[in-house]
Length: 445
Image (cartoon, rainbow, N blue to C red; front, side, top):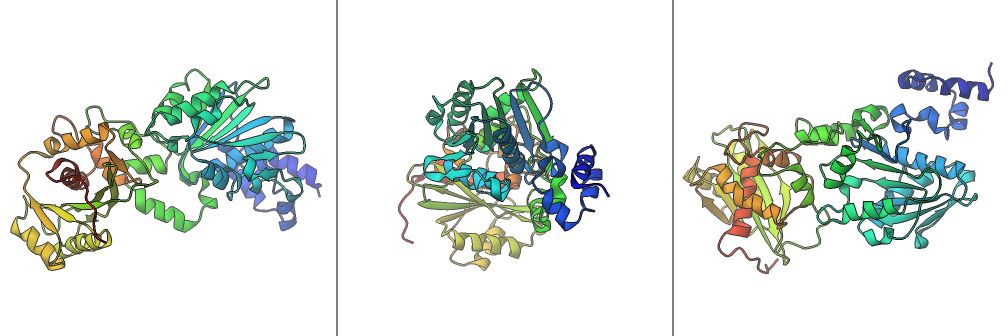
């Protein structure tokens, strides 16, 4: 029988991922334990650095692809072979850098053998190795912290999630690049799920020059290592949507020319860390045209003391009966303590009010009649996004797909026959931001 060194060498020589993994499945438990920290055995080729004289390696892939593990193993290898290396670890925030990049299940501390662990000093934001290599944690939300420090290497995680509402993301990236001046071959790894941010567009545009090498991949490539409920849940949430191509397939979505909303605009207006509690909440409803219509758009929006509108929830219902969508509206109004429910009555008139009142007689209902087309109603709301007066507090895949399909000329080129969710959002934000008495007031809870 071959010894373990011969066995290891033989496995490393297998180029095909599926063939190598099949051989790994045949190993005994003792052999698997011994080879556990040989990353080149267990990694897919797409998780290993590409060849070439690149300055930045961008891993632009779907959720669960194995981006964090690839980043942690890349840093581990650098620290092993480069004594006295200076490495930057940059996350969207210091908390995320520590929780994901360092202490996470696939983070740095998880990929080292127990007897060869680096020393992590949280108070100093520092990881150090016995050979003198040092990694320092930084927050992309604090671009000035990257002005001055010098590095040989850097790992930047979830760069598409960095603060795009201001210029912080690009300033953090630029300050980091100006400090990449140690050693003979400074390089940066950026791992992220794609979003159409300005920084992402910049990096993708540099692929042709060879300065940026891009690895693209999907969630399903790592399916054998992902919990089945996760895969099922993410399919349910994003399947059949354009954003599903982004979040699962790792494709950066392109904008439709002439649309009122663009992906980059929505990303600029995304703020998942809600720090301004809503003082007023309005629910917009776009009822189905028939008793078994395709969809009832139900969007929850709020506004706080800052005067910035917040898109809080999308609880739209597909192919509902009147009783079902009305109950969904009533439940949302109770859950969010809504001040008002705005429902379009063009298609149903008194029937809309009757169905909603049957679900909850005390519902704070206001019926509205559309005198203009959907695009004309949407234009002033799109302008609110342009001026930074609306934020999305989460990723609303189906709603955002519809917004990006509403054309300035009056047509709709998004998914489905009609932008029901987008229309509900327009009604809610019109009431909050453009109607009379739209200023927030203190509510008694």
